[in-house]
Amino acid sequence: MALIVQKFGGSSVADLARIRNVAQRVARTVDAGNQVVVVLSAMGDTTDDLIAMAKAITPHPSEREMDMLMTTGEQQSVALLAITLQAMGYKAVSLTGEQAGIRTDRVYSRAKIISIDSVRLERELASGKIVVVTGFQGIDSLGEIHTLGRGGSDTSGVALAIGLNADFCEIYTDVDGVYTADPRIVPEAHKLPEISFDEMLEMSSLGAGVLQPRSVEMAKTFNMPICVRSSFNDNEGTMVKEEVEMKQLEQEVLVSGVAYDDDLVKVTVYGVPDRPGIASVLFCALADAKVNVDMIIQSGHRNGKNDISFTTSKEADGKLEEVLEPVIAELGADNFTLETDVAKVSIVGAGMITNPGVAARMFKCLYENGFNIDMISTSEIKVSCILKKEGAKDAVRKLHEYFGL
Ligand code: ASP
Ligand code: MG
Image (cartoon, rainbow, N blue to C red; front, side, top):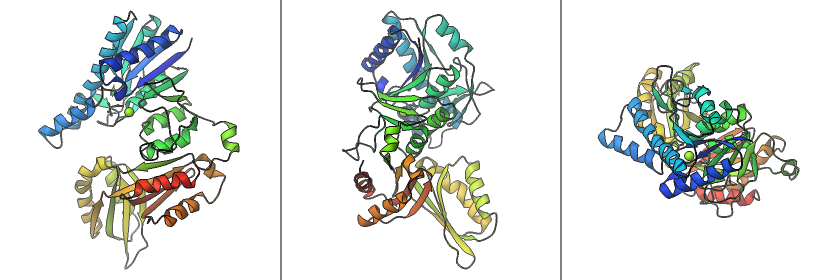
């Protein structure tokens, strides 16, 4: 008997028919002799709809009330699944994040899970029940409700799998697994049978929206294998795990995937005095405002001044001016601009560690196809380029072909 955590995304529970489909899949897993903990997202676009409702009242609703509001979405879906399972003759119970013992830090709207008290979960499992837990939420030490950031149910699923010492975590979504590129951009993209935690981490941080990056980080830290698969068919899916098979390494797969992200704002601060400590002031202010900065470039200075550019997600757009204006004044910088017509195109592959020249080949491909590179950043297994948004999807197709994916 295995203990399996099965997480289903919003599209998998979008209506009652799909909830029934999920119930049948869970039931099959139980009938095969396994214990199952189910983690659900809110039905379909519920979270977006709830956000839109609040924003129709005021453009900046309080983060506490937003968390209170958004967590109702997952409460609906778990109760409906438990009712469906019970109607099919199975013992099931739904639990909120609090009831499931999910403890978070005290950051509203993107809290981190700090511990799982699994006593209640274990008791329910021991009594033969299927336990259905709300994704995306937990409570802090004061009993306040927090959400885990968009897509946070993935992290709930992985955290519960770790907390319960489950055999593995299945993440069911509306695609078959992890692809070499977004099939909507590259029709020739194909499914990867497996991918390492590190590669997956890069892919999901780069906007390949299959898994919340935090969930992959956690799975890597605790070595919890994740299987990403579709809730609409029985195809095998992609295993995200520590080591990829030797055969993949032998074939010298340099690049495993190409990612595209246009959920991006590029900020340039002009005329920053060239003094020690400047970057620290600027980026500490951004960090204090919980703005996640991605790429950073400081240009060569002239007349004792530098330009500093960085990128962040569009989510931060609303508060950037508010954060930057006082900092610019404090630093004595000239001014700043925000650009949203940019996109990030990235190649990811563990093979880059041992094979030099992969970045050079990427630049060559972009150059030969007439793309101008605005910013570049690299890690051991990734190269990202910021391009003008117009045409950037074509760059993804060109790179996919160039690296023989
Ligand atoms: N319902 C939340 C969202 O839409 C959490 C999730 O789906 O994982 O972001
Ligand atoms: Mg999701």
